[in-house]
Image (cartoon, rainbow, N blue to C red; front, side, top):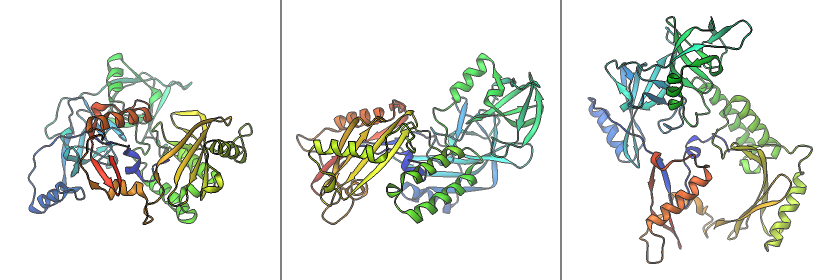
Length: 428
């Protein structure tokens, strides 16, 4: 898996549950009739409405937690590109209205000055995180403490994508920490702004606690300033899709190549369940040997490989457990049959045989899984069906297990809907 389609990887739809981040906050602002109409469109479930500020407004970050997330998309508050502390001045470019399960969310597109010139970091944050009068500053304080033999520390122009230097300062220089992002701190010292590597800054106990509280469980793999590089990467991958088609049909070597590009570029999604495709090493099974074990396991379960239309081979490790590679064989059924997935460990022992819950196609040749999400009809639960509470509990247990406990109920909004596609009745 990767972040080629960001929205699909930021939302996990599981049997019986849809999860949407809880975010919110609103401040009043005068709008033109056109902007009010855009908001009405957003409220009706249309595209997000954007109200531009010309010229941009000056504001300051001010959140009761002491820090605010800046995100690439107005959906990813818990997976930010960067986090900035209260008192950092921003320019507000846009106000974004976005309809969600929670109602209307209000976001803002803001920029943070990188240096004293026009260069800036751009991100999306909740509109409620903005103050239009300067709040009290809450910057953690640290001292430069690099390990170079010169006892000097390099202060960079940005968070690593150009490697250009603003200055080189001696160990012991005191800095204010404006914000943090993957691998770097954005600091202010002697009237200059710049970036220092995480390992080159020593924090007091109090400042360390503030930084720890602000550090997200997971950063966006596309750091601030890397958007153009990511676009170029996406174009390269799109060309592969255009040439080779469905990724499930790619040869193993090509999948592993793309994973290596993602790792090298820093764009690999850090979700613990993300697949990192790999090539078998000298001590690993060959694909033919692994396939033989999988076919044998299927035969013992009463299924012949030749009865399936296709069998796809995967060898990967999950980001959360890179030391334990997994073989997976996906047996794609003929129309009307059931698909199966067989997993083996590195040595070839079968760890799972899973009959997928849905037939491959309905009688009109449509993918039923897509119909479940988009083509369903509302249904009323009957006696003997799962109750809404039961469906929520089952779905949450599955979701929590699949995310290794990272997901917390307090940070999620749970909605349950009973639906029907043909004769199939289910909780979403």
